[in-house]
Length: 269
Image 1 (tube, rainbow, N blue to C red):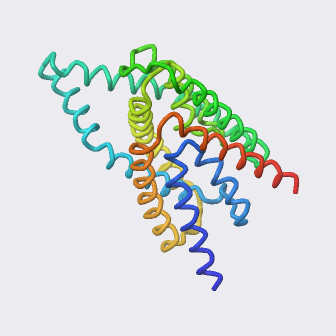
Image 2: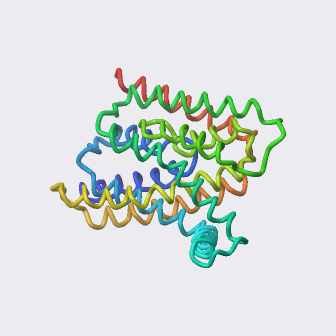
């Protein structure tokens, strides 16, 4: 029975990772909260976190496979074959790289020094909710369809703060884009493609770290968690891409506020 409960915990954490990695509600914040509720120490689950993050990464890569394929193909044609018609694809890839550089540098130097307790996560979730509420308030402006070099740099600066547990990566990049009056679906596409770009080196680093730790692996639990994170990330991105509009961000803002307050209360209980 204890083994079944343990596997069930991994499954639930995998589902939570899958959904919250995509929705603007912070996967790191939710994993911190639910690991507390389940009595699980995330610091001892390096391999588990790598596996579930990889599940989300692969789900987004699958969802955006045509976009990724076109960008790779266009970049190749522009750089190797000198085809001017592919210049826009190459420029988009460079903009993605510009956007992920800040979080890569910031994460490399500071990720081991950031607080990851319920109190800090609670305030970070409240901040995420406040940012989402702010962009909701400007929902009736005229939106732009193109992402400029300046837009990419500013989105990258916003995304840098996603390293703080409780700050939603998709939420903060969405905020950075919408504050610049970029249309929501354009922001979502740019946000998730930048996540795919940064996930490649992060996954390699995570694999290296996983090989250096001694962690007992529940093969069934970890495997099911991977499947759940993949499936629910894929479902979440489909829902987000198809149904979510700027006017609906108020619901995510309210949700982050509630979960943030719950985290703060649990910290003092």
